[in-house]
Length: 270
Image 1 (cartoon, helix red, strand yellow):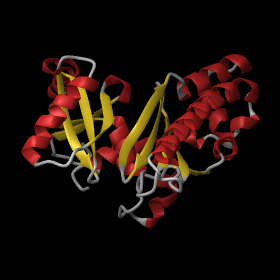
Image 2 (tube, helix red, strand yellow; image 1 turned 180 degrees about the vertical axis):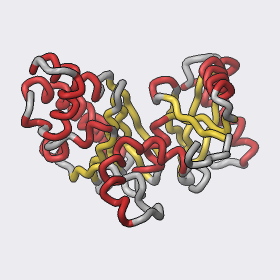
Image 3 (cartoon, one colour; image 1 turned 135 degrees about the horizontal axis):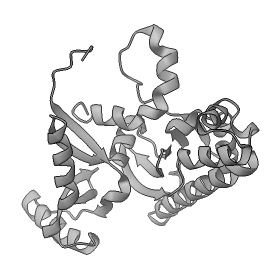
């Protein structure tokens, strides 16, 4: 209200595990023939009848395509949410696409988004998610276990998690955090192995990007670097955007929590 925002068109994201996406090879043929070929290929990969989903595909470079599918039921549910909120649902996309758009670059990187409900891991290349996985370990779970082990309330545990990080309750926090990083190493190896098989021996994942509120936890980037053997940076989805200099510190602080939102906002600009 104070910001006097009048726009009613909205772009929403859905959890990566609620949809389906896969990368396929594109044969050399006309656009009309390609459209038919992709629809035929989609039947092989989408685990539901095409009549029950909404799917689209897009080119990734000249030889690959990306198929994305979401059930009609889920789309209708989000349309109803938008309607009840007085909004017009302009687009709906998997959050892995938003993360890749906001945080990815030309070189391949592993994005680890530790959310409140789950953790999304994805390999981003040229701003596209080429490989992704979701694990049921969340920032909420880390805080809850810390709260229980130290006998303190949830809000106090959340504060300690961010400020003292791995220096507090590491015997409880580290096993869960390491389970996420182990999955990250597997994803890196799967991606790099596929590249080696394709003859691209020098192509590798260049860095790891941590996002989500838990990325602010003290010591997490150092531990992630030791675990993955990669350079680790904290997500800053506002790069390339114009903002007052006095907001720099604040945006750096909240940036990891706004990666998906920033990616959605950039959809119409990239």
